[in-house]
Image: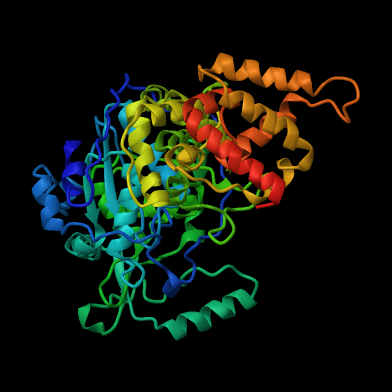
Length: 568
């Protein structure tokens, strides 16, 4: 089954996705939480209801394969929603099935990526199925380029899916069949109220100090297909409790009178978000819906739809919002919220995945989690209800830990896109380059940073970073610098021990009485570092000199002396 994701993406790029073995099943949460307070519906304005997906997304890629191509990769795909009552009434599923349902309207947002990670990890831990569904019913904003960007981000994070991607835009027959079933059973009705009429009645209600929900004017009118332009509304059953035990927030719910008879099908026959997501979750046999807490206000109405369709609702786990260190909700204008941003900045996918995992979930004091450990340890009980702060200061540290541990063949392969970006070409794997990369593991936080710091080995000629040259290439350093170059030129053995010995000799010669100031190690080492690498950051200076070699080192020191004496 898990090969289906690779099949669907075969024409985009060939990533090899590693599979972590699932651990034994974990019992569902029985924690007792405080009830989530009733909240005002996010969809009180009937004609303003948008087909909201469960993640924001932005970035362009090639278009994805057509749905018939995906079906060819997924021979076991479900045939569709059966709308007879017996089929719609389902017993609790034996196998865990989760889903990720992004909207292809932009890039893969880190909030969406975390939702996907939690859903993937929960399914993998229980040996279940992870389904990918594209909620693209908003045709004005949804694009295949954005869809490809979302899938590319998931693939980069190594979050492989078992079924899909399924597109809501290609499942219209299922939604229309569900509406017809609801109309036939009296659980829905046609509404001929115009937008202007609804707005007028809404304003009168608000001016009277009351909260607006649909007033039921068409509820018992029995309008048929011949009534003209009409929407379809769900007829809420006041006797059906709209409550659930949230696996993160505990007992939750909303009063039926605060929800109202909402529209489930527009006048043009297209489904609204609530109907499509419920029909899809029923047809895909989803057992656990893991999504952002901002969707908690949608759950009550969706429960009403499950009951109206005669289906057993899945369990819900709403995860906390991700906020900045200032406690404010992340902003696309202010914060780096795209998964592709972190990829392009040079963070390793394993480090980014680890960072996302810790945004709202913990396992004791452990900070670093391999993909295998995520599958072994992830549980819903350990998700916090408090907003998760996206501490960008933690990610560089995490990334460095992964850089230190990454085997050289994998590290070298991961660096090649950044060499292409910097040099316009890939680099051959040489002993000298591997040696400097090993030395840079302790000093680099990203792949991009490692590439930049290694270029002094690649280039025959380098330029000096202006600020570093101004700070360290002073007239006071000229004499000891020249003396050290002369001693290095006379060396017969170019090794760390010999380089360090001559360095100490020059330091001692400049530490006697009568000197204006004692020459410290750093005062001589930093000018040498700038001369050799062009910057004031590098691995140990003697290791760097040995790696670069005597001829190239002496040439660069001569160039630095010229700069010290002539200013260029």
